[in-house]
Length: 159
Image (cartoon, rainbow, N blue to C red; front, side):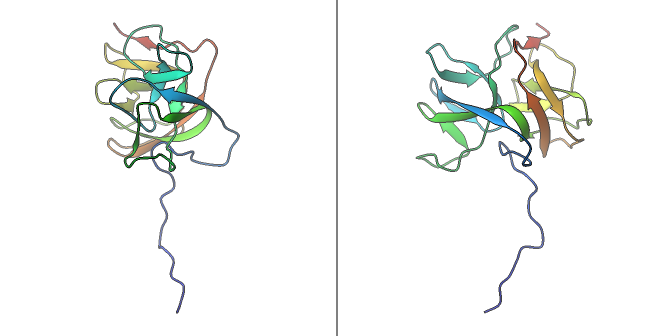
């Protein structure tokens, strides 16, 4: 029997590191009800060592961007309450794009759509310090963000 190979491979996926460059991640626990998607920015929860999705309030401490996990004890592409969450603090990661983005632009997170954008900050679009689009991308596709968590790492919104 002959071995067959795919004609093409996906270069990267949402919440997955894009390349083998130096990277760093920390582990937090998903706090609260609902789910937490892969490839989104998180901030500290109210309990120690927990995290929640970044909201549109000014001055939130951004911990990093959630990485995808292939070892969750449940199905789905998101974290549930009490799951261990891998949070990228440095590296290049795949994310969902809200609109067309330009290479090198400041990456911002649309808290309403749950996707990334290079649009101006507003009441729902939050600037994530240290996040920059690594390449141009199209709306609805998987894009690439280079992230290096600065200290302090406080978000900024237009509200």
